[in-house]
Image 1 (cartoon, rainbow, N blue to C red):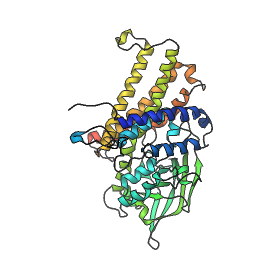
Image 2 (cartoon, rainbow, N blue to C red; image 1 turned 90 degrees about the vertical axis):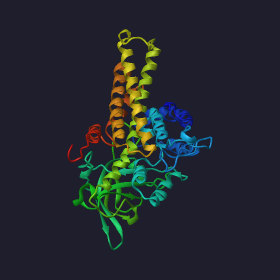
Image 3 (cartoon, rainbow, N blue to C red; image 1 turned 60 degrees about the horizontal axis):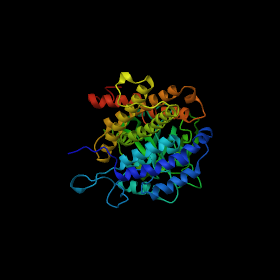
Amino acid sequence: MSIEFESPKPIVQTQFVLKTVAEEMMRSKSRYFDEHEHEIPWDYIEFMHTAMKAMGAGSLAPKEKPSPSPDGRGDGGEGTNGKRPPIAYQSLAAQIEMLSWGDAGFYLITPGGGLGAAAVQAAGSPEQKAKFLARFAEERPTFAAMCMTEAGAGSDTSAIRARAVLDEATKEWVINGEKIFVTAGDKSFTVYEKLGKGFIVVWASIDPTAGRAGMRAFVVEPGTKGVSVNKLEHKLGIRASDTATISLVDARVPYDNILGSPTVEKTTTGFKGAMATFDATRPLVAASGLGVARAALEFVKEKLAENGVEMRYGLPRQKLTNTEREIIDMEIMLKSAWLMIIKAVWMADNKKPNALESSMSKVKAGDVTTKVTQKAVEILGPLGYSREFLLEKWFRDAKITDIFEGTGQINRLVVARQILGYSGAELR
């Protein structure tokens, strides 16, 4: 049995197309939308919605079954017994890495399900998946967001204070709470004329005395009374993407919009639903960070080459210049982090538990993205610090990789618990 490291042909073809998009539609407008944070690049959104559908790539949201490849036979290379292995998440990671190489903020406003759809995919019933996920194949670009973080519940999701109470008379859930740092929260909930009917997924407790076992996710649709977008954040990086604060005051949600069982048992199934979402998406966040880091590294090598500094691969390390050694170290970090991502998404594609590998890839990518972009700025000095080029922007964009969808510290805890066999209560 051989090990094959070449990307399947459909992935290579999609990357080729997306590189053109990254260069022509993202890089060319990166600076403008970095400086005009809450303006919306409609041209990009509408183009990507049309392009992703035409390529059969969906809207950056994995499907229950792999998409067919251009040759009509499947979505990957030959596997055992002539069958083609599933590559939905592997394909997503490659797409996201390339789009983030173009601009991470723009990638985050690429139409699609995002974390909201991932939550439905992880915890929803077949009927809920059919109802809500079908929206991303409609004519208008559509967004979905996940609302979990609160002022007093960031990394410690068990501290969520949002509450959902069942009104027995109307058979509706009444939700109260406030969610902060909601990526794409405005586009997912505020009804724009140019957007389809998206939704937000709000995490709340149906029984505060049950702890994590009482946590559930609810699909909340635009137009729901009592729900409002109160604030858009001004951020260090990824400024093309909106980050919102959403309040829910006596918001009434249909009974069937709860993801998971409406009854509380002495388990943590609700919380496990949230974690299953992150197991699928953390490698994708990691891939986004590596796209930013690759952009920074390639820019440095390009500028060095313009000034007569060429890399001399193959020489003993002691014969290389310090700059050459630093560049090679950066390349090693990028390639090792990418291999960890590939393992995590391969496991997701093959429906293997990947909590450990998912968090490991996120930790590694968070470190690598921050270190590579910082070192890139250092190597070029004033040129790297100057706003004349995008390098300083990539440095700012990079840090979010280590923060959202679980900080580096929290993911290290997840890794330690998985390896040592400790529960959350035993190792905090």
